[in-house]
Image (tube, helix red, strand yellow):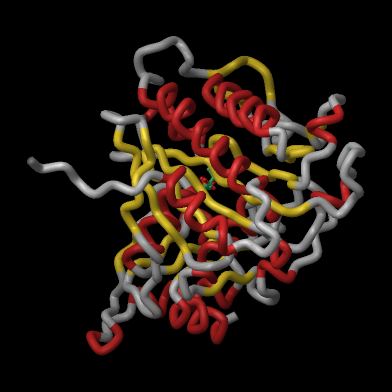
Length: 333
Ligand code: P6P
């Protein structure tokens, strides 16, 4: 009899509930609902090629980008699940200009706020490149029983209670941290459960992969140009020249580097003088995960998690990955 010893996300969350001071099960329920939304979005992503949800949704999202239908579906799906959890009092999403709150008392009693990019890398959807959901969870600052306010969402990343991503790739994985290590769960479609597959992910201190869109090379800061040249120099003792790997989907590039070692860079460019990636729902969760796995995440000057956000959709440069690689880059910056 070949049963296999599987631990589902739900079992794991409940087991780890005891890690939480004054654990009341509220956070457990919230994370459970994130898992449900991830499974539902996965279903849609996997069928994207078949069902007519490809292509432009026609309207422009607040980023001025063509909004693809799958973006809208993923955004709606996560917001529904968060509302159903009754533990979340508000949501900040890349797809919505303003924070999302609800009028009912139960939701306003929620202790957590949720920031997300519901489907990052959506320009990759139509060409079947893996995409992802990125999320970040905070305890609210404003009193329970009221609607959350902007200050609840402008907390620095070092106040995160949890962060994670779902990668809809060759397999679908949910990777998250609550500040006690990074855990990976792989979706087993045959039982419809996320099963623990990576216990306590640690990123190598060194790697030989560098990820950056070199099309913007001419506009990079001098230090970044020098580091890229360093990556290309021959030096067997430091495994150089490194390999250039860039998918153009943050979750995919980050996930590969997290497991194998490497550095991901999105510096300021001509079209994005403050960097392209968003602090609140892209850089902060990625930085929390990177640090929990032993890596480093900086905007070139500041630790990402220490940056005090000023606005909901604020962009920052991002340099994240293996400790020694990011530190080498900082020498050039
Ligand atoms: P570029 C996708 O649109 C995204 O937001 C991230 O997932 C990805 O890392 C980045 O933009 C790619 O940007 O300018 O290199 O195409």
